[in-house]
Image (cartoon, rainbow, N blue to C red; front, side, top):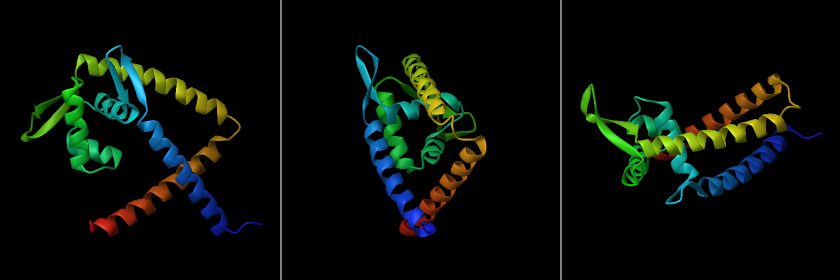
Length: 158
């Protein structure tokens, strides 16, 4: 019988492989139209902006677990491509509220369809697991994220 430590090591290796593969997926191109391809990373930023009408750069960074600088760079890139606009917030001139352009909404809708198909495939493949099993997995993932957050905060001194 495997010890908890052995199981944690196996889970860590598996998660590491999944994260590396996921990172490759995030950089793969997704065709929006005949003139534009976006990475899934860019599309996820568009999705976050489309789903959160009052989102700003700081909130976008927190949403993805990246620095404000990284979020700002992504927003600037999307703005240059004509997908996102930055507007002054109603309650602060220093804060910028992010909105999608019509092209941004087109990309959002295409990505939503792609995600809908992806989620349907996952649900079908995970159908053998009970909701309780899936809830346990969600709790395990939360614990793992908490450990990573703690390690990051010790490294950055936050």
